[in-house]
Length: 333
Image (cartoon, rainbow, N blue to C red):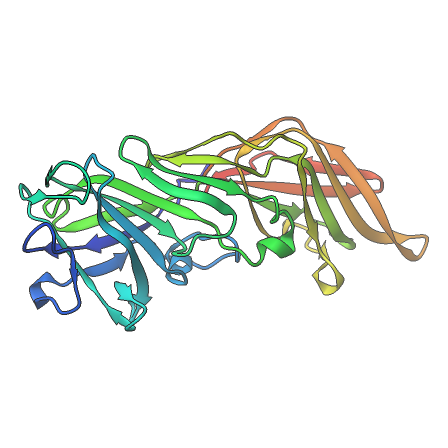
């Protein structure tokens, strides 16, 4: 297994004048907020946010709360990558805005409830800024459990549907002050979903993959993210939906490399679950001098797909036989 590839950003916030003053358009220079990225790498597939390069193509939503409360300190702030750095951004005026640390020990009086003695701040991040349509409820925040949201991927169980969506990732770190990290907030974005990838094994020069179908999957559930791990509950019943990857024309996949497997299609994100079912494949190859489409299938043993992990399935096709290699197929994402 590879080391988990969390996607990190650093929020640099300067000290504010009092608890109620959290942002401004024209601060003193010494109090200006800067945002720096913490991971670099090459961009990969459309649906996945794998590194800081991918992250910079998105906007990030930042919420912050007075520690051990659900009382917001910052609500819905947008982080935007501009001029080679992350900035809190005002879309209406197309300009940067600035946020400040509250003074520890000061008193904040919410609209409802008792006054709060300011101690530290809890930060939550989401990417992309506008949540995808498959996030149907939430996200909501509770200081004892973290972030909770409900997901329904039922309408996004084809490769064409997933090509138009973005993966949803989260970050959460609590109990931060302006002195915790010399004024910075280190946030590591993590993957609450599972990623699936397909490969065609080496030496398949005359076989084109037209369609791959994973049968009887769970497509929704409730995710709770506590800052270090995701827990999924209330999954939809198995068998409610299939995942279908269709590859047509020049997109149909073959592999003429004698030594190395080749990835088939794009990444696929799915609700973490245990899968034990049927995989079907439609492929074209030459029989008696003519091309024919063939259907082959297999049933695999129970496989547990965990949040934040990537699973690669390598297919080998022999006449009417489909073989799926799952050895060394798992890595932390």
